[in-house]
Amino acid sequence: MNIDFNEVRFCIHTFGCQMNKHDSERVVGMLEALGAMQVEAVEDADVVIFMTCCVREAADVRLRGQVNSMKNIPVRAGSPTGRRHVAIGGCIGQRDGEALVRELPNVDVVFGTMNLASLPRLIADAMNDGAAQVEVLEKSDDFPTSLPSHREKNWSAWLPITIGCNNFCSYCIVPYVRGREKSRPLEDIKKEARGLVLAGAKEITLLGQNVNSYGRDLYGEARFAEVLDAVHESGVRYLRFATSHPKDLNDQVIERIGSLERVAPALHLAVQSGSDRILKAMNRRYTAEHYLGLVDKVRAARPDIALSTDIIVGFPGETEEDFQATYDLVEAVGYTQVFTFIYSPREGTPAAKMPYDIPREVIQDRFDRLRDLVERKAWEANRLDQGKRIEVLVESVNRKDADAVSGRSPKNQNVHVSLPKGEDPESLVGSVVQAQVTDARPWFLRAEFAGVVER
Ligand code: SAH
Ligand code: SF4
Ligand code: F3S
Image (cartoon, rainbow, N blue to C red; front, side, top):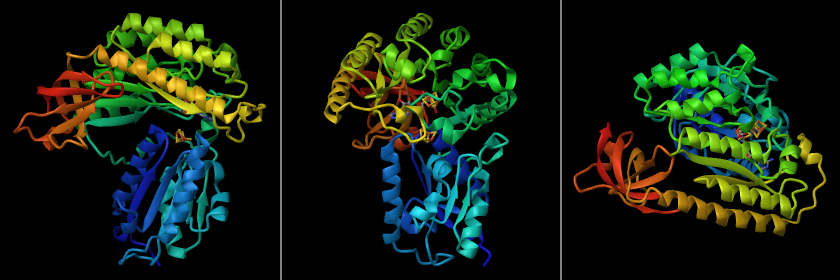
């Protein structure tokens, strides 16, 4: 058999971080370039691709359940091979490789984070001869930006500037499944940014596990500030980046956050813990004091900045005192958004070998206390915008109210904007509008439409 991609329909399920989401855009772009058709429902697909994440255990468990459930879904009429093929990529593919086909007999293709470009060949081989195809590489030689990318929307785009990570935080599996940090040449980034803006991008989010260390591998020093200058020059309306490691957020970058007007006033600065003892055990290489100093500097440079963070609760050895230090830090900073994770041991990481004796109820109690604090602080921060007129980049028609649209403010708040009669919600998607904030909630703002800024 010789499979013709024009007859192949595929769907893709993506888990994990924006890196994976962007990799999925490349996968879709490649398969579409070959003639294959993307479909939404598994029922209609000949190939189901899972782009997986293993940063916490829950993601592992969920994937296994989903792959197993594929067996119960009937094959579509018109399937070119008479059966449904399952491909697993992303971080679990990279980590488990061959073992996945032994554990999950209905898996046909396993690929990793280093060889996206091989996927069409692996799918074709699996469809042609029926045997499972596994290919996982230790490292990739080039930055996968030459691959076509299918971006769902033209008004907002992710732009990877580094892949991989060198930090080896003691709890984290990412460096093992994404490899060493690799920066993309500045010229290449500039070119893609210009192209995106010409194609209508109003928002660009620069991506990397630690964007602040951009350039060390290429130029021997961190040059993220120059990336900001270069992409700012493209004229994009909102320039965002994720994520920043506190140990590498330098004065040049803070200066740009203050001086470049199109850098959006939002900074995600993962703190993980407020206890120096725990930060040390996490191998984060900064102290709570250093972190708070950065917060002060960033706020001095950009007083309206909204801060968000990641926190791990229940790291091995975390005492009530350590947790209290985290709690106090969250109280002091006043984040608009905090992603709180319960520590999940990942095999192969140093933290997984540390003795563990924190009872589940204690962790849950800390998690709940932190969540209540975060909600109170986020609400406080949002209330400052009550009555203000803000810009909103519209992302969708509101799910509950068909006469409203939803989007995000420059500070990255979710905003529900109600529309006057006659304004077509659908046609506003991708536009920037003015909105008058009428109600501030902990997790979103309600606002009234006050005109279009940019279609
Ligand atoms: N490179 C990013 C983080 C990527 S992982 C950064 O350093 O900011 C996203 C978040 O998942 C981390 O910030 C951390 O809070 C959380 N995380 C990573 N490994 C974890 C683990 N083993 N258990 C619980 N949370 C974890
Ligand atoms: Fe993981 Fe730390 Fe790298 Fe972030 S910086 S990806 S938390 S090792
Ligand atoms: Fe998950 Fe891999 Fe991202 S483990 S968080 S998808 S880098």
